[in-house]
Image 1 (cartoon, rainbow, N blue to C red):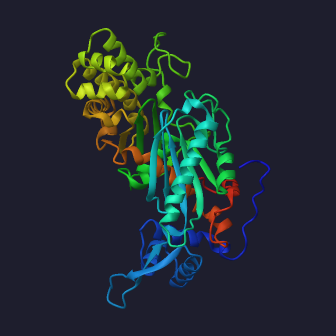
Image 2: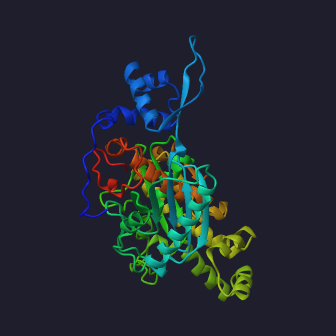
Image 3: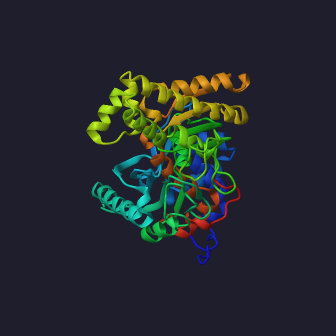
Length: 439
């Protein structure tokens, strides 16, 4: 929120035991432990403490009794379940040309969602007006499906297509977002929905989505690369999202790949990877090929639609158009060349390729793989896997929800709201300092 919002100290009571409460809750939420004996074995907490914490969490509506679990010789233990339906999270992923908005439960399951075209360059007021309207529409859908007609909004998460100062939730000089620099996205949405709000770069939310619910689940060191209109990366180290000190870690799209003054990037610099291999670059080069008569397929697209998009280049390549195959292969090699350096430097176990351009076919992915395996250190690629995103278009949306969920259930924040049973109506929770920040 802002400097004028005071964070009240946690109440006494359950907050006194918040570390053990959070431990028990996390074990059940993650599915790591489903019964009291399992919780004891996993956590090291004594039987009495486990019983007390489970009873407290049940009384405050966070856990509930489930069916009987398997018996190990004595009386079968009762399974425990996280009450994921106790509240909802509003999530959104804003891209350059579209917005995806959804409502999830507290386990990150999407209850309803919608994707609509938008132009991020139209400015924050117009775009966020649209997002808020979609949130309201989806909340009405969720309310209509409940017996009481009521839902409790526990938090809001949103990913933006540009650098974001995570501590304040404000965009910072985003190249493709005129009018957004320093805009108080967090404060606006917090006031509108009376809930804590977290804002991040969309590639970070995509990486988090894959980590929590996609192909990176259970992995410790991964690199998520989005190849869309622009290019960016999300870093996961030791099982935690790494944002860097200001929140702009992973901005690989603006790494210099050439000194050619003719290759001007939207950020104002020359020779950026994004200006050579991003979706906008593919569309530009495809349009040139159509106009110069080097691609019959793209020339027909241009004559029919008046323009050429990156998706048209991908379709042309899949149809065997030689020029389009060359454009996609070149883009893949350029991306792979930079990733080879990152793989040798960072040594991830998994590289996930996502984004609209990456999902268009196997040509680009094959070129990325070949270049990385050829140019990286042998030890760095010995067990390295390079795969396509399994969440596809949902990665950023799901990741935005998990960003909120992870922050809400951090022990220090849990201490501030567990006695009241819900973080709804407490947007100031974002200002609670964490001993170990959720990264």
